[in-house]
Length: 245
Length: 120
Image 1 (cartoon, each protein chain N blue to C red):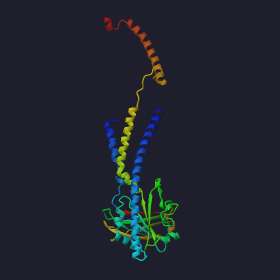
Image 2: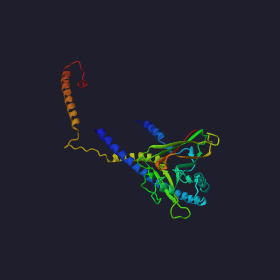
Image 3: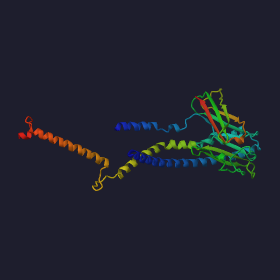
Image 4: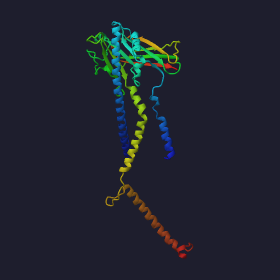
């Protein structure tokens, strides 16, 4: 029971330390995720602008290969992702308004082609949190009031998770060791020396019982030896140094 | 516990705790994002590029695409072979275009997963 109590206390202290480190990790992760969101929105705006230019130049005609080459010529495909560094978007979707309204494709938007945050298409729950961020930006052709389509960019938050761990892993580990050290020092500081209280007693009942048994045993041994000592005094063949003096 | 034993355990612990595996290593990667559009038939079409950044020649490479419905069940899975300028071998730094179209109804696609599978 004594060791079990100690184990529970140690486990609780470790839990508190882990909670503290986890809070720091979540804070760093959220900070990095916000940066990624801003980057996704900016990229969606750039692509939407280029899509408007493409459709104006080609009078509404569209080919995915040509549009990809158009983006490469105007921006450079590598530059599209190099700005992201950690979590470049895997998919860059271009949906037309007509397809969205006919229900051919679900872009995760409402009727006005504005991002619907509650749409299940914009969420992906894994590892207990939404690990997908979707940036949607409508694009217009020939200064029309209604958007011609939307640009949709999906980015995963999982690479951010591993990146934060990669960058701060050693820091978290050292923090864990230091906090454990501090907890041990705190324990030493708080540990009180037991003062002797004669009235209430300072020994456990079990200890007292064993002392009583020992007392009885020692008493018996002393009694036994007192008999033999008297016998020894009488024997003449034993030399006693004290007697010689 | 002796000091030397404690030191040995600490050293071993630090050796095993490494975050190096979390860092992306150079390999066969997508060059830029994959462009997803709905074609005239109402099907999803994908266009993109792959680059060999592994520093080695890659013998066989495939692009694997998995589409799932809202229940998480796979409704279409495609494997597209990545073919370089010299057949199935992809040279170091070579950029290859790919293009494929799905057969299923676009509205049923809820989540997508695109991965590259290759042998060095």
